[in-house]
Length: 330
Image (cartoon, rainbow, N blue to C red; front, side):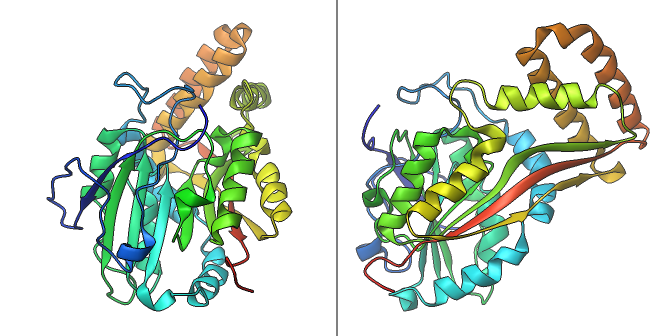
């Protein structure tokens, strides 16, 4: 698929009970009449290359809800001050910010970031799954850090190659757990689009390929290696994505900062740990079926330790802030 596919856009106020209808792109929000256009949306979710279909594999909202608190604790708040400085110096800042959240899921990035930024904000939430977009829209934050209004619109559809036109008027691009499910061409397209639009990007919670389980088990390393190989299946970059993104954004003149953003899972996060373990081991066995017999015993023992409160896990991620040169500016 080439070019930007036409999206179906919906708009909602930040009322928790609002319905999300189908229609044209909203002009609601700061400077939206001039700065928000219905130019397309971002392809995320599964790795099919065609248009979104009704049988597209979904990320379960229950899983996204389960991980939201740990995601929020893990994100690198150290990157927010340089981001705030850049946003404060953007041309047209008085009209508020237009923020594109790519692969928004249930909207956890907006719930984390919007209350940490001052000023009016208009969030454009992108996902291929209308079910998740509904959750994201009705659960969106109502106000910024200084009490300014936060508004939302949603866009559904696929993008094979993102362009600067799709980000026209954008103040910021955000995403969580995105880079590691992209390939090198898609990361290059994202970096080029942000550079062309002159907008920064805050891309959080990309897998780093390192996991620490305590107590240790002899099979930990084999499972981790198989999982990392699964993340790299096909042309996907998996744990190599952050390094590739650093090169891509730097190559387009952006200043890039990376900060660790690990999950720290203990007794209080046992439900999340159990679900993560099942997915982690399952992906490893899918990649290396010869692990199946040993992995079954391994998973059973790990889940028992988790239930007993005797297992801690550190899942390493990285957050990336890319500060593109402002379009037509300094």
